[in-house]
Length: 158
Image 1 (cartoon, rainbow, N blue to C red):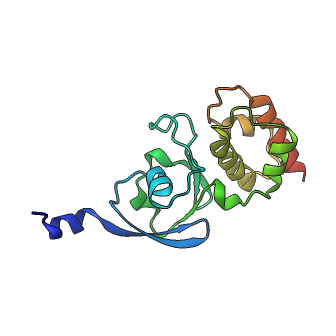
Image 2: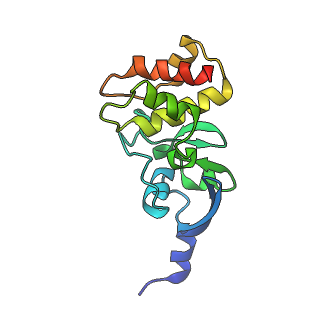
Image 3: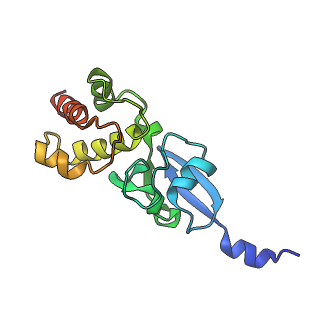
């Protein structure tokens, strides 16, 4: 027999603003934000990489700040704005520069890279090489770092 009172204490109605839309998810507050976004909200652009906040494939914006969603409990996102790659809409100057500079190779890390770069450009519209190096700590197994830097600089000029 399931104890509904205990079961209800473990699950809560998590109210999030996800890509500008209010969503309610019946999940545990401790669930990583990554899984809430992918499995519960159905937005699969945010990728799982390492699960320990090292690679950056899962990077999203939380109130405009780049965070590794695999290590952020969804409960900490309640009442805050969560933006995923889908929330950029495919038309940002950064996304256009990404295409122009042919940044993606395999593409797996790209959504996380774009989200980290979006946060950087919001903070520093004209970043230096040192600013880019400090802000983009995401890993790219294909090694497209020079193209990533070129795309960020191109987007900063637009």
